[in-house]
Length: 255
Ligand code: SF4
Image 1 (tube, rainbow, N blue to C red):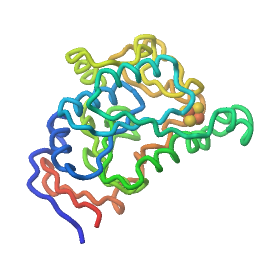
Image 2 (spheres, rainbow, N blue to C red):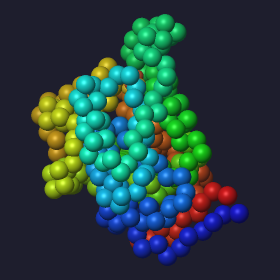
Image 3 (tube, rainbow, N blue to C red):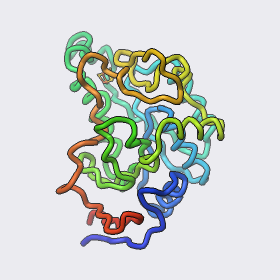
Image 4 (tube, rainbow, N blue to C red):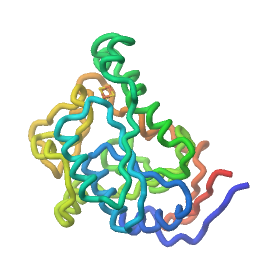
């Protein structure tokens, strides 16, 4: 049997803060988790959620290849938002064990497999049993993310996915950061529009904190996504969210 909710007061065009308030109300009493890789968008979403004072878990995956600046940001976020529960759910496979089992520099030879080991599989474990997942994805981030909806069914991890920032762009995120003094990665001011693993992230000439591009990620490999977000292929037959009215959500949850 499907549970159906109609008449929601938010929709695709709603302000992210309204969507966050709706999300916390809609999934109250259920297992809702927020994930972040400590990108600027994720930090903004954490700030929006934290304002409601609920002890929502904030899951991150320490790949073992974070920049020192990212660890410093993580520590600042934990100190800034004590009402939230930050949890590292990264792999227990150390870089040394990975090299012993799969050879040196796996990220160069097979970055998809490396991402699967260090990101996708740990995320699958972290999201198992959860009802809803909040992420900081935006449609403006790339063409492959252009079809993201605010509320959708994630068939990869089998739960509802909410992307409150879906309609925003980096300039709006940066404006929010400055308005609310949200912590952010200092690398954004040194030419890194996005920050992932040390081995797979390069600075982009001329990029500032208000500009977003993914060309510094896995540069020269053709890879553009780590695989955490099934941004393509989520459409049509697997979708369990139908929006008959484009301004409101009509959410069908799994049995
Ligand atoms: S981003 Fe690079 S180093 Fe990090 S998990 Fe993926 S391939 Fe491995």
